[in-house]
Length: 185
Image 1 (cartoon, rainbow, N blue to C red):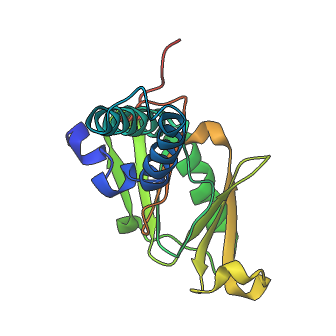
Image 2: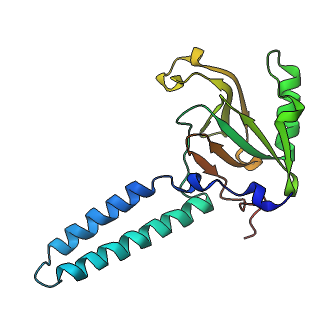
């Protein structure tokens, strides 16, 4: 199995790119607007394009490094990449809890001792103590009623490498590279 199989989907890198681009464009236009007599319109447009491009590239790099994460699901559908220790702990929990299960074929082994598991109706939320997951959630889970989410479980931040949401959400652990290897300092 190659590390390309553990690479992020291109749509996950988008994140807030559009918002970053719009904010940068507006900020640069405002600044240049104060000095219209000093900068020709064609030059101003080139400056705007350059600054937007630079801001989008910087944001993309932050996203890849785990410094521009989505901390919760927007819609059901989640894939979790975790360490072997997390897989063992979660499997043991699910073996003890009635109604919880992950069929063996739902687990996928990846290079660097990383495991992948997907929940087509699952969601996630990152909080103060760790990663909160639910195996299943209704489409309107964000309305705050407990009966809209089912089968919760948690994992520590150190054990989660990456979480990908079906709606383009991404949470990348800043302590891991994309291939699941720990970053060296």
